[in-house]
View 1 (cartoon, rainbow, N blue to C red):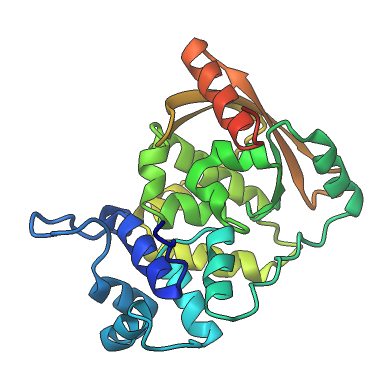
View 2: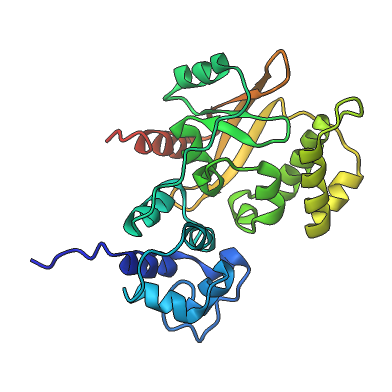
Length: 274
């Protein structure tokens, strides 16, 4: 029986082949003979030389630095578990678990008690603090990230336009909800940096932000286009904590039988239910 290749080089080659060039704004091109990213593209994205990446993939270089591994993880769009696997294969300690946030432990306990239902906690800057596995499954690519920023997802990640069939409306709501965090009496340097970053890199965000819309995403319906189950809809409700340091968001099935089937499939498969 042939032994499975569990080397670092095999892992890098396999994950490189899985990245869709269009997800990174790169042309697919008719001349691509193999799927995924070219070695030169990964090297550029990770800030390493092609020669060094070649040696890693061919097993001729060992013990890359933590910085190189983390750069490769970002270039290859690895989720938390794949990033951990990359480090372990290279003989490096896995990345530490990100701190949940400066929120009351009781909020995190409440979230845990809601599992297996899809629910998550979000900060005033619209950064996901913690989520149940079912919520991460429903959120698709953004749910795979350790601690995603929804404004960056909408305005800096091209995948969001495919995942959200009504992207313009959802993105406008994101910007309007983010404005709720702006308070003249409570300066927030991190929020200011986020807004400056997105204004500089996204014309759409600049336009939405300059509209000065202020609108909480309290409840409603969201539409998604998941790569595995297609298009479906969910209903949501949001519950801000009394001290406004986090908001609990709950999802439930909504719409026709197709949406409900997709909802059930995603939330049960993620939890290992046959």
